[in-house]
Image (cartoon, rainbow, N blue to C red; front, side, top):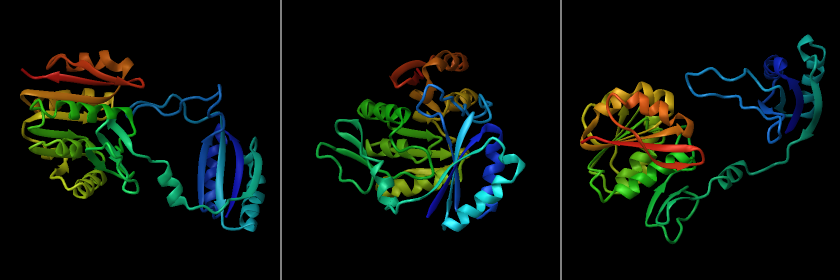
Length: 296
């Protein structure tokens, strides 16, 4: 396996990438050439909002080829194209053979939620002090327990399990189903998990089965009843749009628990939910906050 490495200015990344794919590259990836330096610039914004810019100022374009000849041929063809102007060849180098499965697995260790509550990939043994364990491997759907928003939601579930908050639970935008599974592990009587993405529904069903818990899973239209706790770990923009729908699902005496909110977005969320409830910050971690409200 050979890797062709190129340095490209912003305007050349797309045509060069397209050209590499036409020239039989096995894969093409693009990296910020200034990552981890003072020149690094954020590229992606929130869903529904335009990105701050269309691409990095300088990008490394990496393409894998089966043989040296194929890599060299691709480079020779690209060099004579007008769109290659301003690009720099960094080299063609062999890619060392690796156990990619083992390498990927090594990046996911058990995650501590509380001293007795852990998220553990299937290739790890649970820590000795773990009393409640969710078995979860990385997949297509969001939610492995590594993100602060997920950890804060799970901490809330663990801390409220004995306070009657888990009689009936809705995980809205369930992703991997990790919050629904956490609620079920802590004794929730009824757990519904819904998402707009069918792959998330499939992922949640599989993960619930693997953890031997009962979770009703479906698309978002399924959630028609009232719940003692409504959890939504999404992002600020959809949470604002969903305000009346989510609050309507909270039963009298119940809780609304929202995550995916940056500290600077607290006031936005409070204003969006003000017609229905008073949101308060219940937890914070690494610039993210957990916000909750209680229906009298």
